[in-house]
Length: 55
Image (cartoon, rainbow, N blue to C red; front, side, top):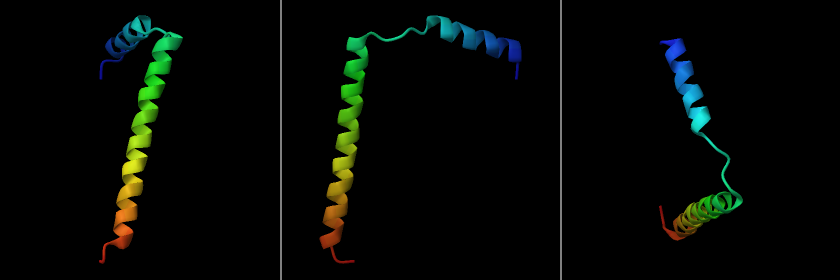
């Protein structure tokens, strides 16, 4: 593990990073929220169906 090389990579990434605009953040939040709702709904439906399927 080459620590100076790793640190320079981290510094380079931090220099490139920027704070997203409110519009960009809002869009990402909506997409992430939709994904969470979709996965939750699928889990609920699977659990609901499994209640009525005999083992």
